[in-house]
Length: 243
Ligand SMILES: [Fe+2]
Ligand SMILES: [Fe+2]
Image (tube, rainbow, N blue to C red; front, side, top):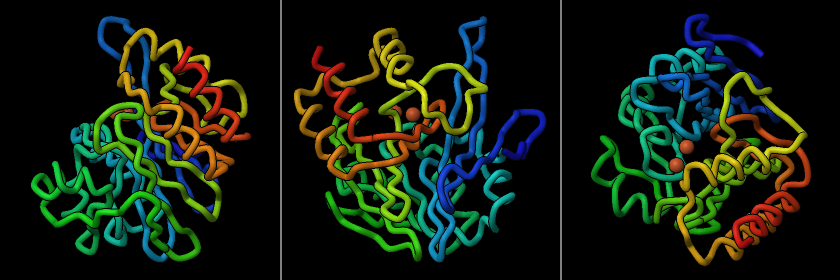
């Protein structure tokens, strides 16, 4: 693991072949505890960044990407849904990488990104595949899971990595880049404390769709990435949501 900014503690770690987790730890004010923001960089002929990081964190994330490859090579700036940590610095990335465009689902493109972004988005339909080179990603719509109508995820098929956004949010910072131990427990405790999941009735069906992709790595946006039987853990999440 390489620390790319000594002051913030921003660090980079390759979690699967050609997929880098960029992690920045933060402390909530007033001793409310730690948290962390992750972005994932897929290095290939058409490099892809999943999550931009919050707008004010752009210099840190840019510095971290630059430690792996030239920022100007980025082609796809992708994200799960429209919130500042997912896509707050989208336009900064579009400016830094002149060949890049936003990559998102059709609802995000129609409702927000067609207007918010400085360049037109490439919108993927549910199940649509995009080749990046050695890697390829498939967009999976997941409306309202865990939140936002436009929500969806990318499945990277070469490494069986599900870029799973906020599904398994773990509080705290300084967690290992990748873990094989329990992440559902901490994520469930945080969900009960914060209520950031929508109350959609379609959670189980959507989680079964994600599980059918059989991920071996779950690339979480907050906390550690997780390695193991992804389908089993997604089913366990469905059970926890319906309990
Ligand atoms: Fe979110
Ligand atoms: Fe998030």
